[in-house]
Image 1 (cartoon, rainbow, N blue to C red):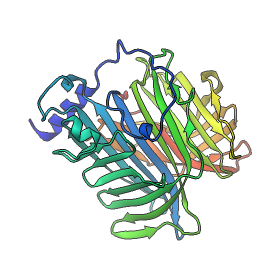
Image 2 (tube, rainbow, N blue to C red; image 1 turned 90 degrees about the horizontal axis):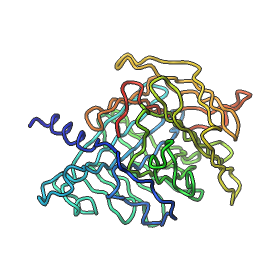
Image 3 (cartoon, rainbow, N blue to C red; image 1 turned 45 degrees about the horizontal axis):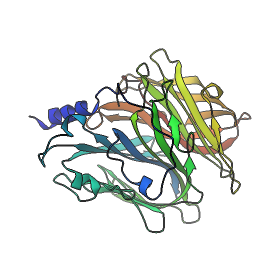
Length: 368
C-alpha cells in the first residue's frame, strides 16, 4: 500500500462514529499524571501558541502534538498493529516577512510500550506519567522545574523554546470538564496554562533569532482529551486563547454548523490578581460576530480574520496579525484550517492582549 494511502487508511480508522459514547464523569484532575497521555480516550492534544520578538522582528509560533486511538486495531495482538497514531504540527509566523512557515509529522505507535514511553519502530512516544511527547526529532517535554521544553526541526524553520509557568493552571469548564455540545457526551477534559514566559531561539532559513532577553515571549498551552468532542451537526469551531497585557487570560470558543450558527459556545476569563477564580462562560454568554473575511488562494476557503467577540468579561475585537495563516495538514490529520497570531482590542480599540485565533471546518467539515 502506498505510504499516503496507508496514512489515510489509518486516519480514517480513527474517525469511527462516537455513537454510544457515555458522558464523561466530573472528577478532579490529578497532576502530574494528567499532564501525560490518556490512551483509552479517542482524541488528545497538547497545544502551545505564542508570540516572541528578536531585536525588531516579531514572530508567532504554534506547536501541536496529537494522539489518536485507532479503534479498529485495539483487539489485535500483533506488535505491528497501529493502536495509536501520533501527529504533530508546527508553524512560525514571520510578521516582517509576511509569511507563515509550517510543517507536519505523523507516525504510528504499534504497541502500548511505544505509547507509554519507549520509542517504537516509528519513534512515536507519548508518556502517561507526564508531558513527554516525541515524534522522531520533534519533542515536547515537561521538565522537573515544571517548565516545558520544545524542540522542532521543520523544513526551513526550527523552534527551540522553553516555556516557564508564571501562573497556576486554568481548569476549563466545570473544574476541568468542558462541555462542547448539547449532548453531555460531547465534552472533554481540558486545562490551560496561560501567560507562559518564553525563552529560546527561532531559526528561519538558516538564520537564528534569539528571543529578546529583556522581553521574554508569552505563550499559551492547552491540553485536552475526549471521546466525543463535536455534535453531529457541527462542522468546525472558532476559538481564541488570549494573554492579556495586564496578566489576565481569556478563552472563548464556539462550535459551528454549516450555516455558521453556533451549536455550542463557552470560555473563561481569569483576572491577573493572585488567587483569582476564573469566570466560566455559559453558551448563551458568548457570541462571535465576523467583521471581515479573507479567502485563501490555496484552498479557496473563506475565513473571518476580524471578529467582534462578546463575553461576560467584555466585548473585544480580534484581529489577525497576518491574514495568510492557513495550514494545510492533509498529509497528517487530513484537515485544512486557519491558526494564527492575533491581536485583542478592547471596546475603545486599544490593544489589550495577544494570542491565537483558530478556525476549523471552513475548507471542509472537520472530523475527529
